[in-house]
Length: 227
Image: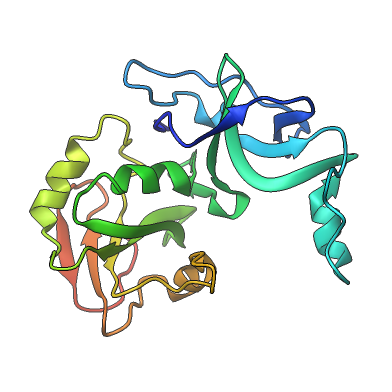
């Protein structure tokens, strides 16, 4: 999965590492192509952990399951997805809940969101998984446009075509043009609500769909069905 080399956090500090949650081993060093796109996402992206222990984490009140999720194998698991380059710099790739399995390949939301925000008409964006009709996930993006802008599917398609670090599988299958994104008081997007709504968007929003092997988007009059 090509992933743009941006969104870095910091140089690696003592005890900070990127781990594979299944094997409980450190992930491979990230490799990049000439455009700065990550070429080994499946083996390089993992969860950001503190191998020395809990650090400042004192636990969640009256929630032992959540505590157990954070503290495993004597390490603190942050829930943040990340990858590390050969110089030790760490790049954030979203949250563990942002994993998507598209056509047999693991994708994360944050790199796709960063690419979409290059489009001048977009003000806010949220990328998330919706179920594929047969297996795995499809990529969906909810977009809030800047005041005075409208969604031009042809211009948006041309924009996506021009992004060297956007793989075919990472290209959103569904586009929701939203009046706003559901958010907390601190402006954190409530992706769970968007995931639950899927392609059944409200009357104030519009849905655009791309065919499985196509690149053009067409307007959908109702909830879309994965093809």
